[in-house]
Image (cartoon, rainbow, N blue to C red; front, side, top):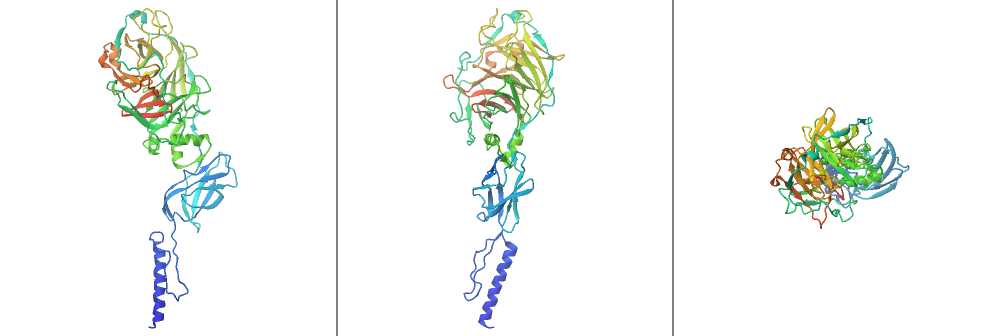
Length: 519
């Protein structure tokens, strides 16, 4: 056979072989971009192209805002041929409104032909140069907190004056049990510390804060560590900078936020801890709610991970909450119970809140009265319920309320009782602890596991065996104590202590707001 013909056949075989490779293995086999053929052939090079293949495609860095036509940011991905240009197609309610060439992982900025409004339903498609769809986004939605509305007005029942089952004057000589010293003053305020030195509104820091028990603590929770960074910027909707009482029930965290515009009003906000964990926010990306908060405030459209974060938060309607410190869960009614102070120092209200609507379903006003002296008791900002329905309130003695007893300023008394015929019925425990562990009474919590009442102040707590306090057998060695601050060094603001499904301890602190987990 002629050598020239042999060469032509060999070249043709090479071409056929390369074409077959491209057909069967395109995008899967890395082939040379150019194949050299015989120098005297008209076709000297063959170029192979592979279809881009992308994984881990993310649209979270694409920014679009309400009442704007600007689209900017970058679409992130991993995969094959990332440097190849692709077409970005933008749809609004299934209608194609824009198409332009971009490159993956590179920033872009375009003007859409129309402004977006809050009802826009935006979706993206990535197309190769032949018009084949490489990837589709989920729908973008305008970032806005899910606000629940009240399904009914609260049912008001006026309890009126409620007399205690016994009088402080009858007891007169209370049994006084000295408490361990925390080193914190109950007569002088303590300075508050903030995270990120006075930058608690920043969202670009995924920090982990740690609060560690000091050496003078007694069998304490060793430390608390950041579990979830909560929103911090005050808005007309929620005063995120002012969380108060909180409660964990199942995998849900409920926090009362006091209004910054309407005195003694607030809202209950529910955080679904399970959903937050599934979205990678708890245990990593702890600042995502703060990032989401900025997107909500700037009226930005969001997708994927941010939508997951948004769906994990529900904001309840505004109602009368008082300062919002006294929150507990009643296992019998399956409701949150909130104790609020009234318009004057002696009036209080007891409100039941539905877990699903986060709205009040029943509320009653009352005042406590000593049956012998007929003195009205100053309203309190703490309240706890155990699983059997027993209620607990602690009251701090002041110089004005000592009366003719052996009580002193700063002593802590315990009122205990339960609902009887639809009304709360309380008695005074004759054992008093001396004295409170810090300045502000922040929260009262009951731990079912160890059957102790946890009395919380800023920077410290006392854990007190409930039964021993009730029957009068409480002694100095019975106290556990956690101290996390010094009078000179200051403290984060402690708001509430909660217990998870496995009795894991949690602490809500402020400046800036976060949920911390006990270790």
